[in-house]
Image (tube, rainbow, N blue to C red):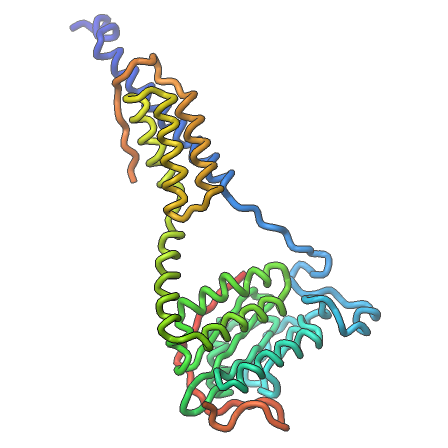
Length: 349
């Protein structure tokens, strides 16, 4: 066959048509996924930065603010010197030690009362340490040094719990004693940090985050162990589902929709695909809003797409793809000989 005849042969023409369909499919798929991801991304409210400097510390309070002890949550004075404080210099004199000065006296007292309530019920012996920074030390090592020296919790129960917050570093660490590792395993401690505490920290509401975190910890300490185990198993299953990305789901749905258009036609295939995506997305845990966005985009793409000639056939392209003497007393707050083995979790915001 001559070169001239080859370029006008049906084989060459068909190969060009196949490549054209492939290119259109890839371009449409990329656009579809990008739009779906952009529209489905939840908006995050921006915190009011007026009361804070670029480091996340509170600005210098006015004299009127200093005189007003009944401040709204998260409206305390400026943090202290941002240099790292030696963990050995921290003395357990109260349940809440705020070296960063991010809590008002009202907020600090409220947290101490909540910790006292947990302690007096014999559930645990918590303590909170807030510092500007851990310096060259990582927050886990810093927290463990404090926990081992303070010996929170009873000698026999080992039910101490320490929360360390480094404001400048934007890090938090929860350390649990041996006796609490079963009730508050590492995964649950991580979840409490991620879902209950740091959303408040992102808004500079440190008292609010610590308060909610203590509430969640108290709930676990007072829940029946069997109910707790069942709830943890259910949450773990839901978390596995929620970690599935909608992007592969959207790509597969688009591919299936392209196949269906060759069988049922554009409108019927688009309707079937969109309905399947909406139901499937909800069942997979993507939520109604995200599933609806993907379904609508899929319907529109399948309905308006061109196939380079309108004829059926062509190429199918598959994408790849108790306590021992510690606690509250006239001399302040002290540990009871509890032990720590590194249980807990850390996080950031």
